[in-house]
Amino acid sequence: MLNQVALVGRLTRDVDLRKTQAGKEVGQFILAVNRNYKNAQGNVDTDFITCQVWRNADVLSKYTHKGSLISITGQIQTGSYDNKQGQRVYTTDIVVDHFDFLESKNSDGQSIPHNQSQQRSEEQAPIISDDDLPF
Image 1 (cartoon, helix red, strand yellow):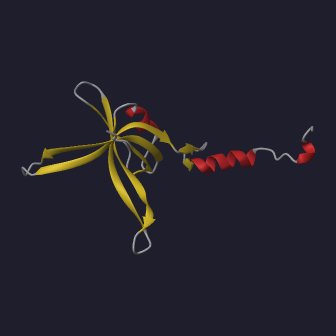
Image 2 (cartoon, helix red, strand yellow):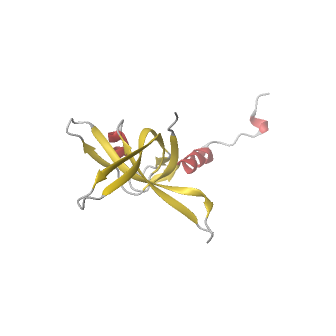
Image 3 (cartoon, one colour):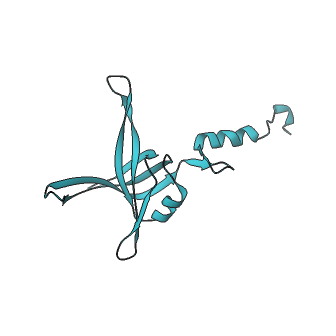
């Protein structure tokens, strides 16, 4: 059996970091992921996917914030519970195995997209012409 998910999206809010009764940290967040196609009105729809991270939850919480662009891999996990009205509520979450930060921070501490970070470093590199090469 295979249950593997890979997503790239933006955090809709800061990671909600909590501890279990056993002292283990867990982070919960919602990832906004754009669909790869446009709807009938010509707009791109967005899915809001509930995620939980157990490993390195403190790192994700410390280095991201609302709007941060991240990639995750993990598994779909379904569950259910009875709400206060006694109704059964079904849940679907992604349990994160791995995450990557897709943005860098500039000297002011503000996020800049990863591709812009690479572009800026390339712009600062000296331009070498063929005349400068020793061969």
